[in-house]
Length: 263
Image (cartoon, rainbow, N blue to C red):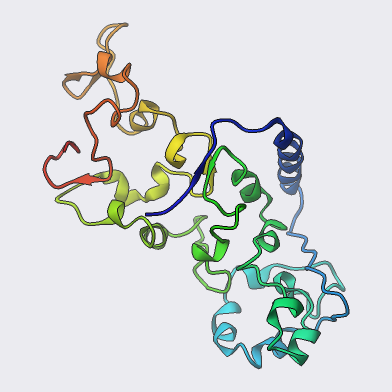
């Protein structure tokens, strides 16, 4: 099963960072393109993609069609304006001594700060009270994302639903297994209910308690004091908290016994 971190409160010390990050993200909306400042490696110079492809032939086949290949650096920063070195830093020392990878090249798979230099909004999400433990060093971005792949992002934005569900299922196998009665929300993707990076709600949910379920399960208010979902009066039940913790729809991902997600 996957792991995530849940804090009961967010320290006041984090508030200045959050404010700065939000300002940075907001200001990015007026910038026509992403400005990349590559990682710096003392004594190293930029060598260009062709030098990288000489050894990393597997990446050469897919990287040129990826979103990250199209990220442009400041004019004059990198040969040709785009490069592997946007994320990995200048590669001359690594090319001369490829066996010494730990010191001579940046590996974003081990250090997410390389990803956060562009993805400021995601960095902020990982500082929310409930989050996947990336900042703690127990996970990294490349466990879920392929930075060299062509399909890391789809045109509609975000990971394609089928691919995203597969990524979640790598860890959350119990929730992703086949059920006799499927929860239709699962077909729309895990992000229908969960924030993958961080949330202010338990279990990385997008909404708190029954508010999450009511986004899809329309209610009818027959009287000001009564709430019906379908033909069932849920007035007292909703006041007990979430639809699953109230002891009713406990099989939220799917059930082998009941079409209404009951055990």
